[in-house]
Length: 393
Image 1 (spheres, rainbow, N blue to C red):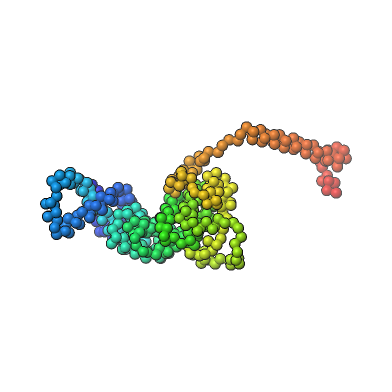
Image 2 (image 1 turned 120 degrees about the vertical axis):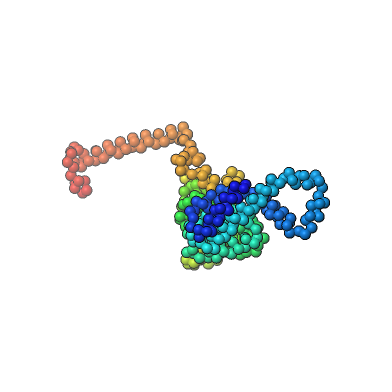
């Protein structure tokens, strides 16, 4: 409404006049805004058409009276759309100023999160400018921290999946940076950062025409490699994302073939080859980590690994869930194990009790035999002071 627009304008003016020296919480509240993107776009186009057309008055005179009354009745909706468009304009103008003036400042992570959230509302002119500036920042490895670099990748992929989907843009540098970030332990250990990284992979899967098999194979190997070392909640989300990669690029199923392949063995990998997302080594290898995950202690991880090795689709409950929801569902932060472990059956408990009884009786017989051997070695009687030298002869 009007109050939201006034508040955003005041904060945008403060951000500009203070040379971007404001507390990050001021920009964090912008992430809570609920804007109607469709109404904003419709209102903006209607406003442009109203003031740009020369024959607008003649068209309005020819409108049917009933249609005129209906248009007047929906005036509140049009006002909401105009206010949403004005708020979006203030937001993205402020975001663009921060990106150009303070790319390495403390406000940058929140700016990138805001761009990713409202990316579907950006017009094409501002989209091209943002994409160019963000890619320039991303090419510098020291310009952004690990969380900020991840949010920058996320913002770029969100921008190019909406209105920018029609743009012919080579995103290799963005995907290369995402591949490098998936090896960072600080990112893999953080639940929200890992969920953001997997959402980036989900956006890649939607652009199937631009998917390259060696590149997707590299991402697949990195996901299953991380799933073998991370907690079970993270492993479930990683394996679910790996399954989506198989669906998006069926050629990657060659990694699941365990038979020996013809040809000379591969030479030892160099460091630059391991970090190259387009290296052919990944698609010429085998996803051996799935064999380890078959025997995982968590039943859901073991089930997903078996399905993945057989190239079977995900269960519907897991396929519809987001990475963050999957990690929250199977997390043991509250002390609970999901699914709860089942108690052993009566037959299993009886068999275990019989084994314990047999081991205890066997232990008694062993003790008696040792006592007898010591007594024979000591001259017929077991004394308290034993001569171990005699026993060793």
